Structure formats: structure tokens, C-alpha cells
Amino acid sequence: MSKSKAIVYIRLKEGVLDPQGKTIAHAMSNMGYTEFESVRSGRFFELECETRPDLEKRIDEISRKLLSNPIIETYRVEMV
Image (cartoon, rainbow, N blue to C red; front, side, top):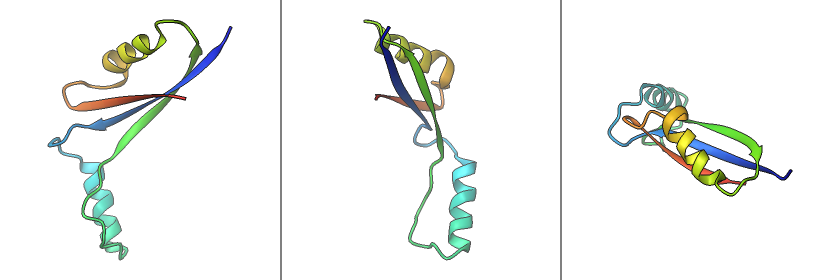
């Protein structure tokens, strides 16, 4: 059976406080990297799976229901 791979990128929605990003931005500034105005953190998941006709729909569903918190996060799926 054919294999597929998807990468799901998760990040906080605009306006949601990102304490990790703030901490990183502060550390960068302290290290002399003052040209950066802000940092937003995120995470990603690599999914290896069997290819099937409804695969993109199922990845979207799992991203929405399990991998992200739709109240405070957005996600983007990239098929590779």
C-alpha cells in the first residue's frame, strides 16, 4: 500500500498571549539580537500514514479534534 506524509503546524491565534515567545524574544534582545520585534512559538507533528482517498479530510479532522485546541490555536496541514 502507498504511504503519505503530512506535517501539521500548530500555533497560537493572534491575540492569545504567548509566554514562551515573549521569553525567547526577551532572551534574544539580551543577547544583542535587537532587530527582532516579537516571537511567536508553535509546534508541529509529522504524520506518516497509508494513502487513502479521504486522507486529507481525516488529517484535518484529527488536527482539529486532537492535535490543536481550536479555541486558542490554529493549524495548517502540508502534504509532503
